[in-house]
Length: 293
Image 1 (tube, helix red, strand yellow):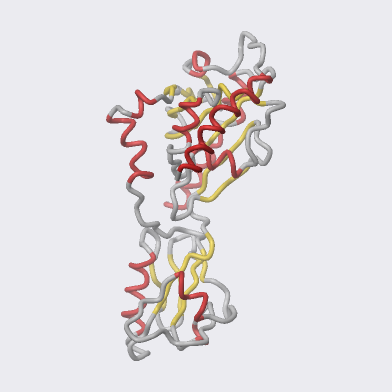
Image 2: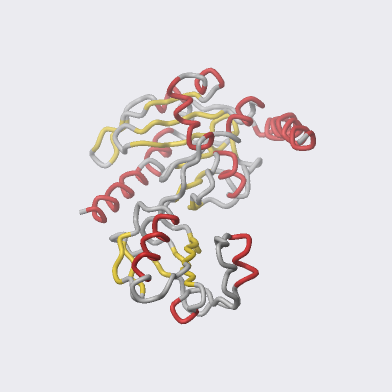
C-alpha cells in the first residue's frame, strides 16, 4: 500500500513538469471552456453544451457523488448485443464452448479461478449475442439475454437444460465485451474505441490504454469528457497539470459512449472540436434508434 501511494505522488509531481514544456500560446479561437459554452450550429442543428470543470468541490456535491457511484458501488455487468459468451455444461463438451476434462466436485460452484484447471480446449465457438439481444443454444432454444447478468443467464439455462440433462451444472463466462464502449480521441498515441468490461473504467485508465497523452502535441490543461445527448451534451473539463485533477481522473468512472478528447497544443479551434468530435453522438444515437426500432 505505501508503494502504491508513493507511485501516485510521484506521477502527480513529475507528469505536470514533463507536460508543462509543451504549454501552447493560446490563439483567440482556441478550444477552451468559454468557447465551448457558445451554442454551435452543426448539420443544421443547434448544439448547446454545458461545460463542467472537474474539481474536488464539484465531486463533493450531490451531482458529483452520483458521478462516482459506478466506481464506489460497481454493479454486475449486464450482457448486451454483440457480447461473446462461453457456455460450459459440465460433463457435456459436445454442447459446450469450452471442453471440460473433469467434472466439478459435487457442491463446488465453478468459478473463474478453478475453470482453468478443469477445462481443456475450446470445442465450439463462443455464442454471440445478436443485435436483438438474443442467443440460440442447443436444448435451450432462443433466449433473450440482453439486460441480464451472467448469474441470471446461468440460472435460466440451467432450468431449461434440466428438461434434457439430469442435474446440469452450467457456467457462463463473457469471452468478449462488445456491448459498451467509450472513445478516446485527440492527442493520444492510440486513439480509438475501448470496451467497458465488468470492471469500471476510469478516465485515467482510458487515456493510459490509448497509449497516454502525446507530450509533443497535447495541451494537458484541456482534456474533455463528452457525455449526454447530441443537442445538449455535458462536457467535463479536466486540467491534467493539476495533481489534484490527476487523482480525480483515477477515480472518475466512464459510461457507455463517453468521448474523451485530449486537445492539441497548436491551433485547435472550437469549430474543429464540434465538427469532428460531437457529431459522433449524432451517429451513435442514429444507430441506437435503428437497433431499438
